[in-house]
Amino acid sequence: MDRLFDSVLVRPPSASYEYCVSSNPDKNSIDIHLAKTQHQSYVSILRENNIKVLELPSYENYPDSVFMQDPAVLGLRRSIIGRFGEISRRGEDLKLVSELRELEMMKDSTLLHIESPGTLEGGDVMITDQKQLFVGQSSRTNSSGILQLQGLHPDMQVITVKIDLLHLLCGCSYLNQSTMIITPELVSPQNFPGLKYVKLNREDAYASDALYLGSWRVLIPSGFPNASKKLKEAGYTPVEVDVSEFHKGDGGVTCLCSPIYNIL
Image (cartoon, rainbow, N blue to C red):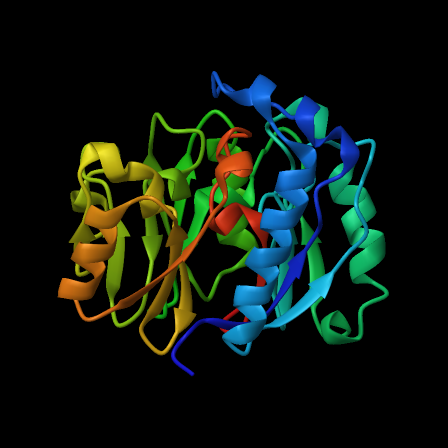
């Protein structure tokens, strides 16, 4: 398989999800029941693409905890437990640590931590098969966190990308074979030397938060025909999933799972 992971962790939305941190003007119309149904569909698609999915319990005390990508960057050998830039989510990471220690699939992974004053959220980390970690310096991830990440992954090339987005993956995602999907109006391709691009227009930017499923299949949010067209032109098969209720919470396709990377 040509993807960078074969297993992911997910956490279904809790009843408190409607109180998540979000700048989306539609946040107040979040439908919890629909969100749970959409999450189940998302998980089904992952499993249909031969990805092992482990569902962790919902966290009622942490409305944003459905966005599993942010607390950590997980690997089979080494996992980095981040430190939230969003203060309301702090504590969620500690609960995850206790869960990771009970998981058989993580028994050989060393857990390392980002310490204060550093902050690092997984949504700011884009991993390639060239042993590169592109990290967004954002309101959620600071320079100290990035410097610590470099020290914890000395065998990887850590490259800082300064952004004005919530997270780096809001504007780009890695696919395969040195190719990424990107919205140039949000993130400059010049930050990623040597890579090739599937470029999206600003109105399709939400679809640049995409999850590569392997075998040239790419999971994107439904409702973006231009993004689907561009992926097809580049040789990919787009797989669509309705994540409208997570869009309202400022989340996208990659936000809903935490891959366990084979390369880390």
